[in-house]
Image 1 (spheres, one colour):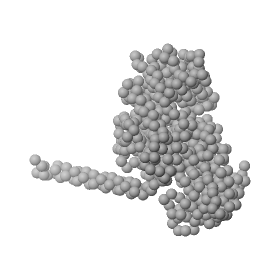
Image 2 (spheres, one colour):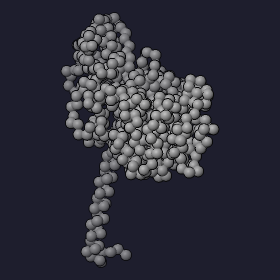
Image 3 (cartoon, helix red, strand yellow):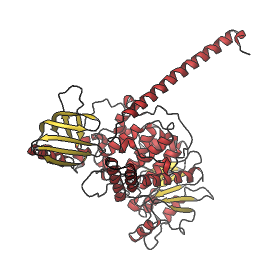
Image 4 (cartoon, one colour):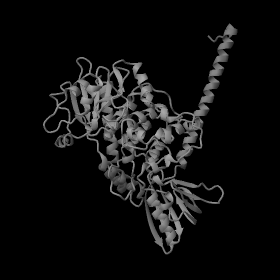
Length: 549
């Protein structure tokens, strides 16, 4: 298919663009296969380059022959185009709708994008499982990297290499895979260096109504327990949901078969409920016609902050079991590709200072989201404005980023990266020129040949000039476990995402620049103090009479 077939009117002059907190611009609107572009001949006016894949929905209306198109984006921005002439306006609108709803992955922009920057570090090779395993090997010899899934046939949503207990051969793993949803047998998620405890993740066990069991599965997870110790299974579903799953062939670990494990149920919402929550939240944030009381009521009714609280609470529980109870943990929900990953990745941010660095966080996203099989293509196909009925869409990754922001806000000196880094990841998960978030699994990315045909987001992020923009000036490495508060008064609305197009950030930007200036000035003064101290020490050694009593 040619993009030209979908573009009825490629260019329109005299289009007026309205954007939040930016001056109105009149110029020429151009449609290409992947972008909506508006450029003006006026000096000092910024061009608009908008990826079609970033467009969630459009609305059109007419006042006489003047057409108004409201473009609602997946990054929650809304822009307005004024186009003279009904035919041109209708043509532009239908072209945008067609180009923004292309389903074929190979037609998406990352396959056509050619970087204008020098690729110093190939992001596709930055976080390979075998390199991460070398770090694990330096701490323990109880695990091995298995290639049992090298052709993705055992578990389509797992990567080719997974870390499993050393004493279990691949044949045993194959038996366990038949007992877990989607073949997602228990694999290592995190090793806690401090006490040797581990966190594993998996899909639900397929116990069904007959109470089916798998002795290999029982032995596999028992292998992670220390003598005389109990483990914790954190099921991210309410007990009634887990009970209902048995009727569909799923279920949970029965106490009789897993006597050394204590099962805890934590209700984290899924799919449609989360998507509905996002839609209600964004609707509340964009509706400025009501009183503060009504706005707060709509905000509460969205249940977004409740979802954030539940996820953070469960992650804190997992971290507490590992660090304070000295127990190993297995986390799963139904598939093990959504709430499970929210919990395992947030627990690591709480426990592991390495995950709070820029590179460490990239490695976490790669390992616990991309390699672990979170279906980004499905979950991020629509954002909060889409008119079509949600199928598999859900803001699972956005909720994770919101939780990270909550911890970052509570511990502003413990993270090497700043809020801009989290916002950037949100934007690129929904629409990007890079191939990192394309596909639903490692298997799909391999089939699409993404490392050969697209550029990695990490290649761009890890350039010095970009790292400088994404680095937190307050950062001071903190080797301790950090325990976030989940009290309602401690959890705030993430304004940097949900209100950034509704209110000007000018004052915040100025305050941030002033803070950076104060930090730099403080460093200069500290350097001078250290220099003077060295000079004084030198003078004292040269002339003992200078010694102060």
